[in-house]
Amino acid sequence: MRLTAYTDYTLRTLIYLGMHRDQLATIQDIADVHGISKNHLMKVVYQLGLSGMVETVRGRNGGLRLKLEPGEINIGAVVRHSETDFYMAECFDPESTSCTLAPSCALKGVLKAATAAYLKVLDGVTLADLIAHSARPGGRADKAIMVWK
Image (cartoon, rainbow, N blue to C red):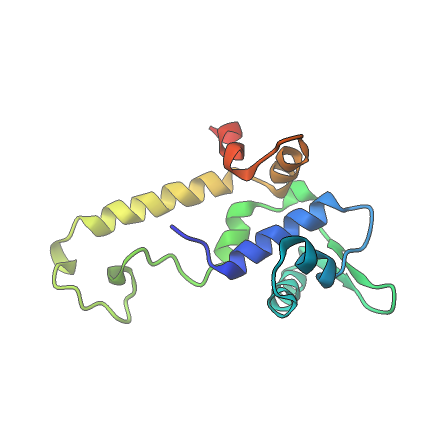
């Protein structure tokens, strides 16, 4: 399973905003820290604003900040909202299945269960969990999963 760049940028933006709650952040701040395109980030921030997770403040001294508490932002819900689909293989897409094995293939069930397990782990994590782990010295996202096992 691989997240799209859009979802990756969404999560990075939320983590950044969660770790800098005492000030307004700009899209440029986030783009510079993560070395990502400001144009792509503008789309992410726009959608985060529509979702109600992020508040945008217009004007000369404007910027953005979390609108919800980090503990209210569920990572599984964020990923579901920002990903376009979870088609692990061609047979998951009802519009374009041409696999001749589809009617009797057990792989689709296995992949469906794997995707459900993946999302279940994400459902057990909030932005507050990610921020708390990232704030620790040497905190790394790949170690964070151990916290939720």
